[in-house]
Length: 223
Image 1 (tube, rainbow, N blue to C red):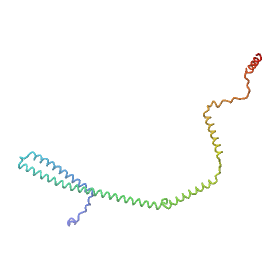
Image 2 (cartoon, rainbow, N blue to C red; image 1 turned 120 degrees about the vertical axis):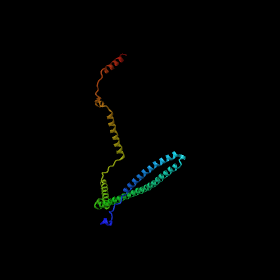
Image 3 (cartoon, one colour; image 1 turned 180 degrees about the horizontal axis):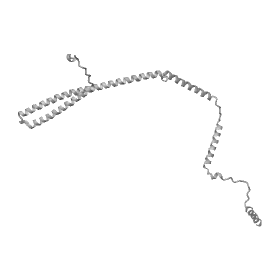
Image 4 (cartoon, one colour; image 1 turned 120 degrees about the horizontal axis):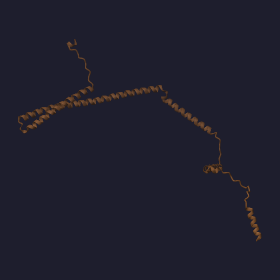
């Protein structure tokens, strides 16, 4: 029945920007090929006109007329190509704008999801509650204050130690003597430390000493 009475045709889905851009690029390529072919014909006509020179007569006029027709066709095709190129530029701009809008939409959706996630976490997680964090900081401050009070109380019962200047100098002199002894012990060779001390006051007699004194007394008497 629809075929007989001309029923409505099925709707064709519209082409996307990418499809339209691809179709226009193909048209531009076709026009470029036709323009290049016309350029080749124009070169041939130019060479023929130059060969005829001023003596061409009617043949020269016909050659110029054919060249003019080719040039007109080239201009028409170039105009069509320029229009399609301008449309392609608009399509590219629209495609870029559409992509930018899609990116913005995706970014907003992602931010919305992130915000909802943060809200849920804030509600079910007590550690992220500002009041809870403030209570923790107050507890830490109270604990620090108690520790300071405890240290101050323990310091109040320290055993007093009184040291005057005389005792200080005496202790420092003792320390100086100990340091000097240690330094001397480090510098003295080991073999010198093992020599025993020589006993004194034992009255060891020396041979010959008394005999010399008797001889001197005898000489004095004889004189």
